[in-house]
Amino acid sequence: MIAFWVAAGLISAAAAGLVLHAAAQAALNAGSQDPTLALYRRQLTEIDDLADRGLIVEGERKGAHAEAARRLLHAADAQARPWTADARLRKPVLAVAGLVPLLALGLYLSLGSPGFTDQGFKSRLAGWRATDPATLSAPEMAAVLQALTRERPKDPEGFHYLAMAHAASDNPSGAARALRRAIELAPQRADLWELLGEALVAQGGGEVTPQARRAFEMALKLDPKAVTPRFHLARARIAAGDKAGGVAAWRALQADLPMTDPRRGALASAISEAENGPAPTAAPAAPEMDAIRGMVAGLAAKLQANPSDGEGWVRLVKSYAVLGETEKRDTALAAARKRFAADPELLQALDAAAKTEPMR
Image (cartoon, rainbow, N blue to C red; front, top):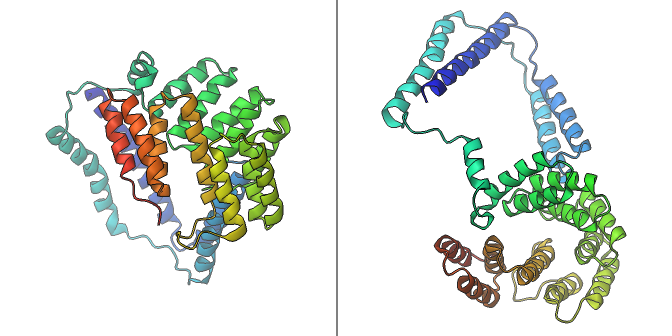
């Protein structure tokens, strides 16, 4: 730990030196033109560049663009004030820059644990890899799978499982990145395109963005009977103003689903809301409510096939609680508590999920 603190002190000193050097350079330019306008113009360009490269979704691009443009207009309307430099502040600044690292070290020595053994990420990762995967949390599993994909960069299945771990960790951006890599390796797999579309919908806050729509269209091209792409593409048509076409597509999907498929009920509710609006006694549903119900039904179906997914049961119980479906919540909670009776941490997570307040 002593070596760490020596290194941390050197890094802090170097950072302080860089800040002071930049301040000195700014002082040399005292009286020059305010660079704020150029900064915001560059920010607008960078936002567009990130969106074009697919690093941010369209909704985020619009919000960031609007905020940067607002600041640019405000800066343009404000009266520019020339930069000034006060030589009297140089010595106090130097003193503060030198004292802060020393103060931080003193606080750590008095309040921290300098003799505590280092818990580096590499050693923790090795421990996770030697542990039963069923006992790992979703972020820990994602870290393990990330390491495995570096060892086997040509295996699309590794990136597939990595995406699932990221999704379980509430990291849709990471899931989308992993799925794009998996698709590069296996572009003819419809399930990967479908999962990419779902990740992009989650990343977009429930909106079927143009990128998500393209992913669903590709999945449907490879598998014309895929349920999830058909559902979301129909929802996108309704959102775009083609309610008749979207509802017709939903009805066709409903006719293709087996009578025992648990998604039929959610689909019927979505059709009814699209045609008639929400029931008078119910709270107004958000535009993405039909998608949420569809995904919850899909999660319930997956848990029937793979009931050992503890995190999945927690998400299912919480989803039913958020939707206000208390009967389904209690049924799922009882089934999960019976299956995971020997796992106190998971039981606690299930109880906490069941207490989630419903959507108003």
